[in-house]
Image 1: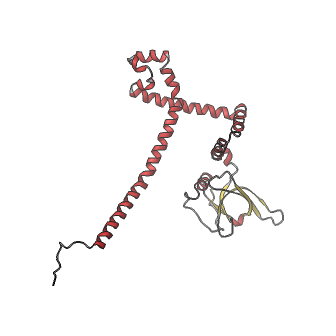
Image 2: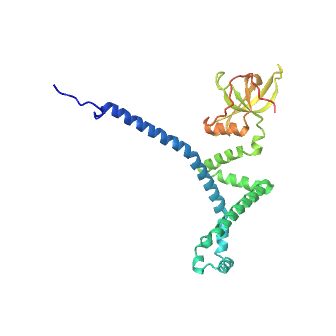
Image 3: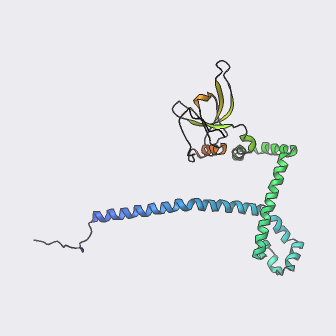
Length: 258
């Protein structure tokens, strides 16, 4: 009659060992995923700021590089005690770190000034004519016209002039009476026969909110919400990934008076 070993020294059954390992793997995977989801927004934010910072710096950095490599710039750098062999081809990299930071901030300020001048130029009649001519030229280039046109539509959507026609955000019964679609109220008027109040609602499509449908609906059939226009546009672009906390399906609800 064989005897089985007893006590704490008995090996753990294979099934129990597999279950423990699976639990540990799931726990480690869950913690890594949680850590990634925590760090990822920070990393993306830092990356976007770095890219924008670098773009603002490099957009006008060439002006300072050209000055440093010019005769006047070489003379100025020599007066600061920088060796001539460090000037050739080095540009701003040959300058002391504190001066590089100063010139970097100066480059950003120069880029912002340049953007202001471009905006000032685009606001007058001659600038608008030139921009329209450039748009017509781009519209003749295959593939590029699709990218440029879509980007310009999206950026123009967030301009003040494009949003002036949007009065409020509402949820309208579309495509049926059970579901609700995000719409922008653009006008209100009276029914010529019944006198009932009607509204025109623009329903934007996803992910391009510059296209959509325009419906005439009864005001009593819509749900007006207190969402900012920009917030509703972000929801449309994201395909519903972004959503505000204030949502209701009660048609009798009206937004609070401001």
